[in-house]
Length: 169
Picture (spheres, rainbow, N blue to C red):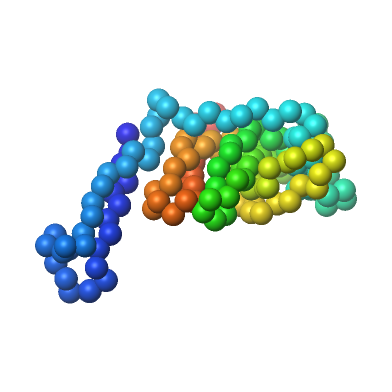
């Protein structure tokens, strides 16, 4: 297990931190291989709305299967969603994890990217999807191991995991 140590202390540059009255130290379990954060399933209609918002008509060629590496095309898929407060403390938001397979990207490039898309919760099938944040990480199938509030500000932080082995032939 990986632990993160959070410490809060006075801003005095020459102060001895160990003897500071304001010094607080606590350990927080950040990564736990055996207890990854389960994501909620995204229904097909909701997934389609998210993908259409991320990739408006004409912005990218979306295909069901890559035919060759010469044709610029992508295969986006919503892997799951999580509820939390991601853009500021105390908000009710939804985080979508979207794998974007790139037909021109090989295994050495992670086969594409993973998007972490924060929206307001979708109220109805006709409501507009409002994207509040959209971050991208190299490599597809990046997972969320934990959601936690490390600094106790009401805003969730993510522990993400990704892996790749380039064994080759």
